[in-house]
Image (cartoon, rainbow, N blue to C red):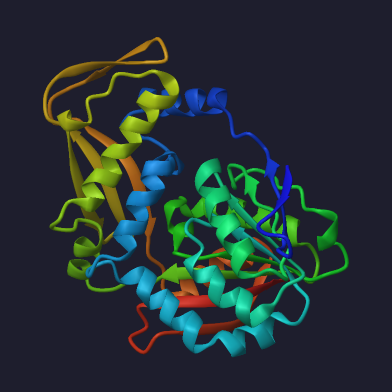
Amino acid sequence: MTDRANENGAALTLIDLKPGQVDMRAEVLAGLAAVPKALPPKFFYDERGSALFEQITALEDYYLTRTEVAILEEHRQSIAEAVGAESFLIEYGSGASVKIRILLEALRPVGYMPVDISRNHLLEASRALAMEFDWLDIYPTCADYSSALPLPDVANGHRRVAFFPGSSVGNFEPADAITFLEEIAKVVGPGGALLIGVDTQKDPALLQRAYDDPGGVTAQFNRNVLRHINDVLGANFDPAAFEHQARYDAQLGRVEMHLISTRAQQVNVAGTRIEFAEGEALHTENSYKYAPEEFDVVARRANFTVQQRWTDARDWFAVTLYRVV
C-alpha cells in the first residue's frame, strides 16, 4: 500500500509482514506450558496496550521517557553530526513517534522505516508524521521486529542507522539481546550504526515506583496482555482474577513484572486448557538495567563498537551510538 498524507506530502508505503496469529498461538501456548509460566512482552502491544503504554510514559514516576527525550533534545546536533548526512533511519518499536520527531528534524534522513507489531497504531502514527514532515518518504513496517527485515531500495547506498529507544532492549534476556543486536548489525550492514537508549542501574526504590504506579495504569497495561490473547486467540482469561506485581531483583539487575492468579482457575487458550493455582505467577516482562560499560560488552559481542555516548546529569539513562565493527 502506498498513499500520501496530502497533495504535496511524503509518500507513505506500508510493508506488512503480517506477524501472524499462528505464531502468537504457538508462542503463547509454549509460554503457558513452561515452568514457571511466562508470556513474551511483545504481546502487550495491541492498540489498547500501545495507548496504555503512552499513558505510562507520562507518569511522574516513569522517569525513562522524559529523561531520554531530554538527552535527545539537548544533544540533537551532536547526534546528527555523529550519524552523518543522508542516512536511512530504521526505528524498532516506533510507538507514538515522540522521540523520532527530534531525530527527524536533526538528521533529515533520506527515508524513515518505523517498525511496530501493532498495524493500526503504526499507520496512524506514520500518517501523522507524513503530514508533519512532507519532505520525508516513510515506510511503516508491520512486523515482529525480532525477525529479519527487508529494506526498501532507497536504503541502498546510504548509511543505515537503527534507532531503538526506551530501553526496550532490557526486555530481552542478555543472551537474546546479543542475538537481536546481531540481527540489527546484519540489517544496517558494514558502516551502519545503532542508536540505542539504555536504562542504567539505580536506587531500587526509584525502579519500583516506575513499574508500579499508584494510579494503576501499569497494572492495566500488564493485564491487557490477557485481553489481547482473548481477542486474538479466543481465550477466556478473566483479567480481574490476576493481580499486577512488579519487583526488582538486585542480583539479576532487572525489574520483573508478573500477574498473580488470585484463585485456582482454568483458562481455555486456543483449545488448550491451562490450570492456574491460587497465588501462581505468570511472568510477563523483564526489564534489565545496565551500567553503560556492561551494555558495551553486550554490543561488542554483537559486532558493534561505541562511536559516541550521551547521558543526563544524573546518569540515569544513556543514549549510545554504536557502529558495526
